[in-house]
Image 1 (tube, helix red, strand yellow):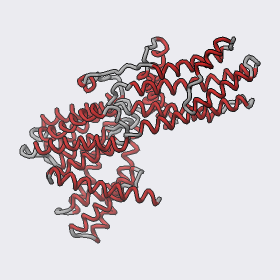
Image 2 (spheres, one colour):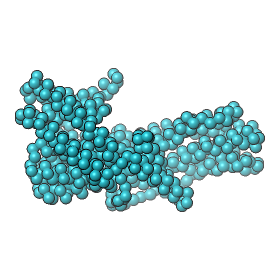
Image 3 (cartoon, helix red, strand yellow):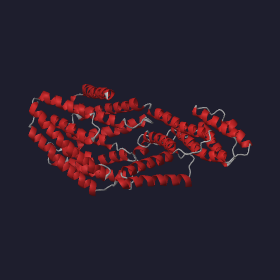
Length: 512
């Protein structure tokens, strides 16, 4: 608890320092840009995108510059804004949601709403805004590098060691005469492989091609997994007398050396097995060893995609990402249109509510709506109590700061909403009447929640049970394609198949 308190406090202070630092460099008119940069930067650090930082930089630069330009253009005319907002929100959402267990669209769209509704630039401020967004892009990439530069290597080494430990333990038991199966060990091995495939899938910046190093590591860990399951056949042949103790000890020594990263005796072992008559289990194990040897010598191709091909990918109209992106673009786009058309002073809360409550799955959205109502209701009561005691602007500023800090400790959405509400009301009430602000907050929450609920229920509805089956079907499709039409380098498809299987199982377990 003490360590959590220290880390949260340090992070909170660093966030404040960063915003002040950004404001001092790019001017007070771009303070909101600093907040947006921080939101996006911290959000995407949860995912390792360091495979190609150059491509990541260009992609983020395009998105950020578009946010700056469109946040100006969209306010020139409501009709123009409706068209611009729909296409921008759709493409950003589709590009960041597709294939991910956790959608990463929220920070980008929230940042766009902040720049459009909270801090829209004038024409004279636009060049400075674009410069700030350009600088912010490099800061986001810098955060990505600082947080994730060693993520892939650390997870790779951890999971390889985990898989090899399972392999070694299985071999030790066979030598000791224990042929029983241990489901928990097999689950540990499968989890190790899945974790490795997850980080390999994630680190491809917006689904770019795999690197030669990743392809080699995929071959390596699959070979180890194959060896583990082949040991079941080895155990049966040893029990039946088809394998003598000498061969078993040689195999044990080889696996022990393998755990230490030593493959030097592999050729000698393979040559010996080829001279002697061996059962099918040893022949198959030998093939797995040869695959492992070949992986080290293999010259894997460096696949290159043109920048245009990486950015402009085909849209799968049958995907759930497509349905969700359409729904979000329509609802948030229309909410922005209404706010602009009627010049609603506090209408931004209408837009923020819709963005927060429009979720891919209907069940998740319904649950989040309940949490948002509860959190806002408690937050309003708490805020009324606070402003009855603390009334001047400096005290209100401290309330905003305190609510923001305490909110960093909250993981549950309803509890987090309590302090978000206090923070939002405190910031909005300075210089105006408290009852007006509170009334508008509650009013737009109710309207926004109603619109989001209707949209989630009737507009391109996605049921969570359907999502799990969808991903499991994609896994079976990729697996079947690999078996019927194997490629020389099927690594990308292998990683995607594991990803679809993992997502499908997670979604299925949530609703069993």
